[in-house]
Length: 351
Image (cartoon, rainbow, N blue to C red; front, side, top):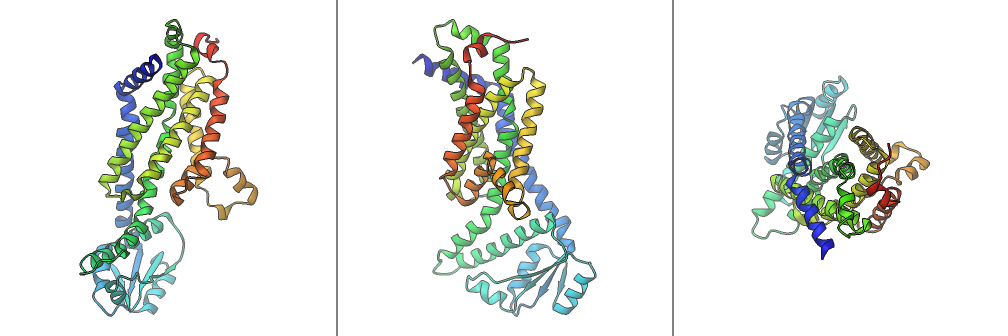
């Protein structure tokens, strides 16, 4: 009973600290929302003006679609549009087929051909918007039919997963980047001799440290899950994949605690913990984001040593095994690295 009381007390202590709520709840919500707004502005302010549409549609649906995209330059001649592309007046031209309206009315996704001069981030963002608008038109059309079918659900999920995954990845990365906050708190507990005083109450050092780790896990799970719930409501995400995201938030919490333990054992100043923690987060994010097509076999194998790689793979493919086991095992390694000689950690501070 005394152990659970310590867990509860630590949870309350963390939740009473506004800095923790700011970093684990408020900042993630603000940053993810800001990134979505920025991406939308990038599409409307940049890529839309450098993109053209070839409208070969014989119906009226294409005009609605083009208007929703905010595209200014529309051609009815494929030859003319491609000539402008060759002159580098656009970086991409998208061709709407003759049966565009017919396909949409049938609830079938039409094929849109693209002609490009180069690849860019703006292009990727625009294509995400293009697919979103197309799926919305199809879904709206199907929902107005007398006999709606499962195609509307299929298309909604397909496009939603892109922004859904993007928001999820951002949140999980922020968990990694902000993990040093609790490392600093753990270090201060040691410096202020709070852990040492707790051992006088008759509690073993191991039970004290375990209660702190469990409270870290609970607090991170609560705040980051709340952050993702709010983000999902704001952007109207489908909650069909909510379970896999919560699972990965839990796995990331375990991983972050392992990193927190390691950093608090290795370094004795807040500054070093912050700098090294930020570097670890950046390296994990960078290495997991490199396309496998651009790297050799040996580098791909090295990339799989990054726990963040397995988190991303789990979210993208809705895969639990073996990803969850691998992440837990990697976290155990970090726990072991930072967990030796708890008595010395609690009682002794080397100069």
